[in-house]
Amino acid sequence: MALRHASAYALRTWPLGEADFIVELFTLERGRVRVVARSARRPKSRFGSALQPFTRSQIVYFQRDKDDLGRLSSCEIEKSYFETLATLENAPMAAYWAELIIGFTPELDPIPDLYRLTGAALDGLQAGADVELMARYFEIWVLRISGLLPDLQHCSQCGRSMEGDVWVSETTQGFVCGRDCAGGVAGTRLATPARALLSVILTNSPVQLAGGEVSRGAVRALEKVTGLLIRGQLDRVPRSWWVMQQLRRRR
View 1 (cartoon, rainbow, N blue to C red):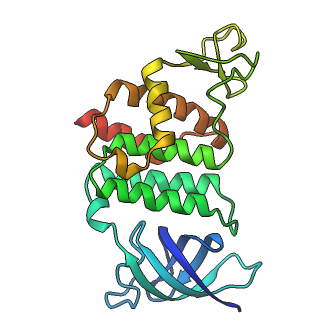
View 2: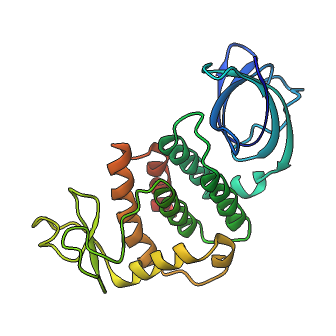
C-alpha cells in the first residue's frame, strides 16, 4: 500500500464491525476518498474529534490506486467547525453540503476549487452569514465549478441578450428569455431581485456577505432555480434538503 498525505474535510462516517468506522473524506490532493478508521468508535480513539463532519485535518493514510478502501493512520486537526455546525439550523445544511459534494464529484478526482469553496462557505457560516443564503451560495458555486450553471447573460435558445426576469427551461436546464424559448412550457421564473442576488453571490465571498441584509423572497426564489438544476443533474432531490425544509416549517 502507498503511504499518502492529504489535507481533508471529513464528510460522513458509518460503522464497520464493532469498533471501526468507514470515513468518507474530501481531500485537496486526491478528491473524494474512503478509508477505514480502525478502533475509531472506541472511547479513547486516537482520531478524537477529527472525524466530525467538516473538520479539516492533515491526514496520513494508506491506499492503493485501485482500492475502494484505504486505511487511515493519523489525523491532525487544522480547523474545527464543530460549534458552528452543532446548531439545529446548521447541522442539516452541513449534511446537505456533504451530499452535494458526494453527488457532484467522482472518487479520486481532485477539484481544488470545490475544496476551497467548502472552506470559504464554512468560514462564512462561522462569521454569521445567513444560513439559507449560504445554502444558495454553496449550490450555485457547486454548479458553477462543475460547469453546470447556465449562462445568465444570453438566452440558451435564441442567443439574445437577457435583461430583467428570465426563466429556466425544464427541458434544456438553461436560462431563457421567455416562455416561447422555453418550448411553450412555463419554466421556473428567476425574477429580477433573485437574478441580482445570483450576481452578488458570483462576485462576493461568503465572509463578505456575512452581516448584510438578506431578501428572503429573493433567496427562496433562487432556491427554486438551484433546486431544479440540481435535481436535473442528480435525478433526485437530496435527502438532507427535505430535512431542512421540515425544520424551516417548524420555525
